Length: 97
Image (cartoon, rainbow, N blue to C red):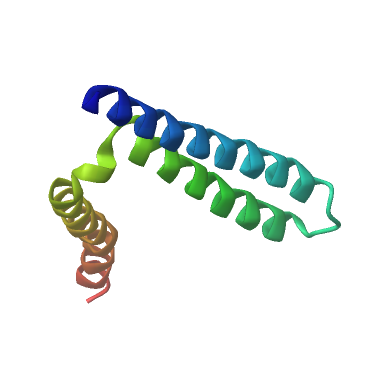
């Protein structure tokens, strides 16, 4: 009986995530019909896509229970990103001097 209850709770969560994704898809399409500049439309679309991607990764890929691993990966990614962004700047200043 516990297994059935557990399965039903998971199905309920998946259905709620599916409903949220459907609503966000409708919002994305609706935003495309608004009279916005290109940069505003792209910004809004990216925000909505990020939310949808987070929902998919968190619930359908079961990453919501992997908080520690994701935090370390995010920190490592940020370190590499800033390193790769600032190395060319440092080499440019070395070249100018």
